[in-house]
Image (cartoon, rainbow, N blue to C red; front, side, top):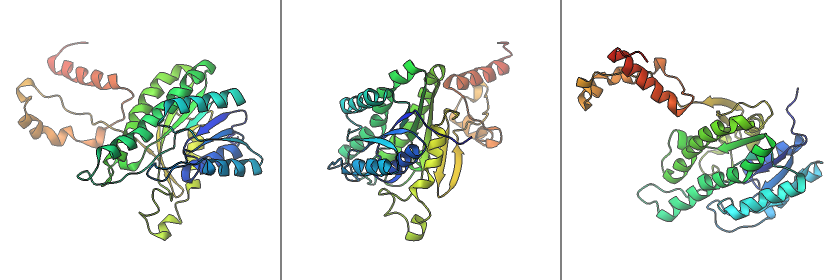
Length: 305
């Protein structure tokens, strides 16, 4: 059965261009009523105009869909709250959130200004938190919600000149982990997309032949899947140029050392075994790590837990 969103209300932030635009158009084409949110600023977050969002809304309406434009700045909680309240008043709910809005202020760490650090975290990480916070109570009340956050390979794996952006994007994974856990009892599923596409943020970084392969529309199927009725939760999906992958944070089985080797030299001596990835696995929660370490220590001490 084809994935549809009939009767669902979606908010897509940063939807005036690039990835957000593709996500908004895709969700609308599958039946969702879409709030097309875009502050309308430049790539560095300066300026502002509702025109990009209004243009996307017009595209949706011409195709027979339902949408409204909203110019809320995601780094302003009052504006985000007003956006959610407006959508709820107009359409009865907000069921789906794709937190996509972002800016770039790339500089090497040596040259990075404090203001550029703060602004990028404010838009990406705090802005995503604000959006999640604004929809959370309604999703809990209706016992249904689907949220997709947007991370980046720059945060997951590192990229020169993006300490601010990378830190903000890595933070999305921590936010997802906790919200997915807290949302389970109310049928709220929270996932994360790690996209790579030809957008305003990447057009200067790649040659034309590569950009031609990286259409924003190639990311949208993964986002739609992660927002669907039968979506997983607490999953990071990578997507780009028609490729799709799952990204996981793994921990090795590790080694429990006798107290006599609780020294840096002891760690160094056993580091090959400590770092052996052959038995690594993804932990399902923070306490699982604690339980594993305690079990290993108890086994060494001959303690039955």
